Image (cartoon, rainbow, N blue to C red; front, side, top):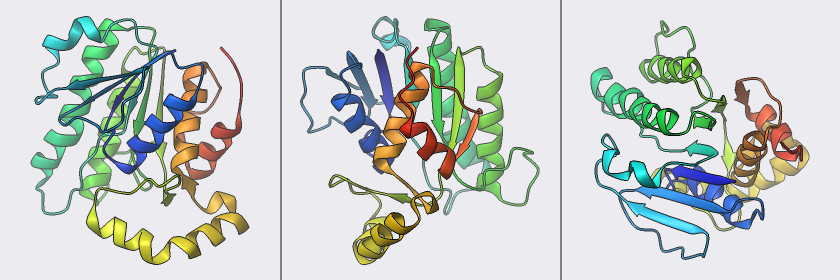
Length: 226
């Protein structure tokens, strides 16, 4: 399986990359981003590209792919709706439209968030934009598309958020969160489960199109093959 991954510098993207590199069924993982990763592995192909709105120069390198794990996202804090929509809806759909044209048999997995508004009419700006993004992706002619709506995500394996406030949160509450996770596994998901669920769905594991935390955990435990 050949995978392209967007958002590898974030916590979810780091988890997805780790699982891809550890999975023997993944032949190649292409990490597309604005900065180079420190990770160097034989099956990791890094593409440093400044303008993710224009992938035309990369098209020859983005063919023949089985799955895209789109973990790229920004906070809506301090943004107007047009600004947030440009960096969320417009960017995601621009990437997705290029990939589906080059790889019509691809599975596309989009990391959204708990509380996303599928009606696109709610009071929360970010939730409306995320809902519109999900709906547009589900209308595209991918082989399959899945929307991940995790709530709390527990980082494992030394993975840390690049957002300072989140790092402080996990540093202070990490031991408590791990205890809660052991007692009630479906109260949250983990970076490991996020990555494993993506891989299992890309292999052909069956699921509803929209997955919340418990659904992600269930998908992570499946070992169905195409």
